[in-house]
Length: 49
Image (tube, rainbow, N blue to C red; front, side):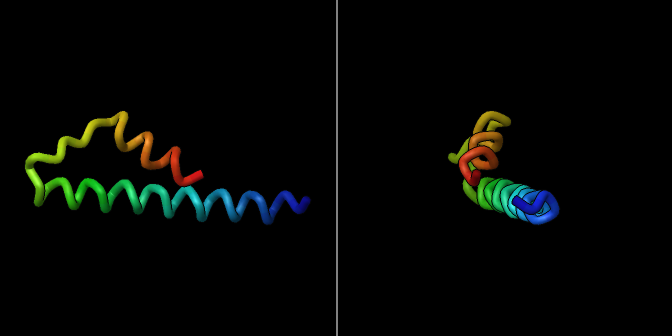
């Protein structure tokens, strides 16, 4: 496989996952009953793979 292609796809995937986690934090600010922990954010990023 092309190593450059894998590196680019992994980088873009990680950026998308971080954007998703950031959006979760934004939603949690408007919903006080939703508790966001570090573990939950890690699961959001990990589940995108």
